[in-house]
Amino acid sequence: MQNVDFKCELRDPGLARLALKRFGAVCATTVHHRDTYYRVPDGRLMRREAEGEPVEYVLYHRVDRAHPTISRFSIFTEDEARLRYGTRELPVWVEVTKDREIWLVDNARVHIDRVDGLGWFMEIDVLVSRDFHIGKCHDLIGRIRESLAPCLGGLIATSYADMVASESDAA
Image (cartoon, rainbow, N blue to C red; front, side):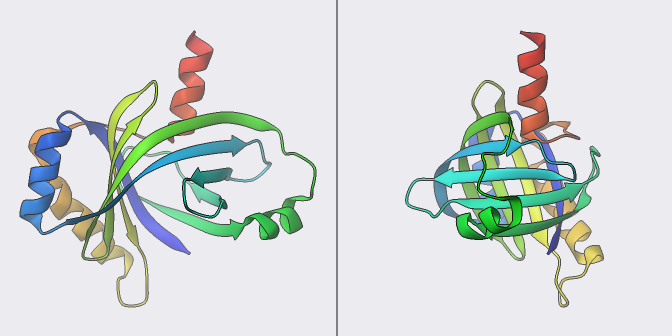
């Protein structure tokens, strides 16, 4: 599967919520994620734990860019991940914990994230499909960004894992 995603700093979560409502988005849920990233030879592999949800593994490939970019990903159950990567523990790279609000609008998931040790961020993910091609994904992200412009901060090119690892190296 693939999506177009975008990430930036979030200056004002309260204003973002109001702007999302005005844009027509609906807050679907709030979750606490514990994401464990593993060292793998190709792409990024993350194990996601969320209370009340089954554990899932997400393998994804994306170019680090501070603009909307295409991400290719696969989602595996715990059993599927063990078949693919074996039963031995994989080498852990870094852990990221965050509280995430998931807002839905059209074909987009807008995430308001408070990442432990880093602060507030916004991610916009738009799933690419036969009926919602890459151009439509970029257009929708652009319209959402425009409506949220007053509360958005700097663009982010890397993953939360890269940011947490960078903070750990600096400490």
